[in-house]
Length: 237
Ligand SMILES: [Fe+2]
Image (cartoon, rainbow, N blue to C red; front, top):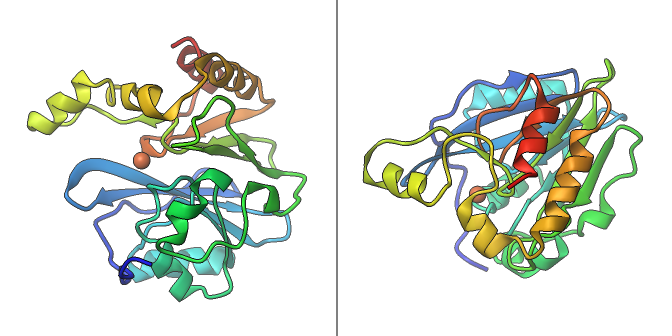
């Protein structure tokens, strides 16, 4: 196991409380202009699922804990594991889940309790593998319907919505097709997707979710408004 990274807070925004059951926060990554997104989803029994764990300042952590107990931590692929160990230290009983094909990579930093098929059964919250992803970057989608009927889909690297970035790195990312609105990035298309048709079909299915109000990317801004149109557009790539 790699040397554990202690609780390390990088600059981050405040929590965005999208619905009664979905909170999200975007923050910095070390040595990168790209930002990452962590999302918290409340299960029907009040426990909270953490997707893409990131270490926050204490006031933001206390806000979260007052809302519900972090009980399940979804490590959404083998790369988004930076703060998984620190979260497990803070919440020793949290159940750590990751895609089966990311198991070996995630275990390098934290003990894994199970894969996506071990996600708690919940009428309003599901965790489903995304169709068409490669074994190198296996990913899923965490979906939640709030008590008011609004639905949200939480993605990881399979959906970016990051604005263009300044400087040379920004130019490279723009050229690679990583930034500039909702998309499956060029890099993901190259290494993360094995069957684009299947992924597109899955996006189209997700686009038709009743009450769809939000799509949350792994990197970048929350997609709201006509989310159906956005996901349908992403599926045409
Ligand atoms: Fe990522």
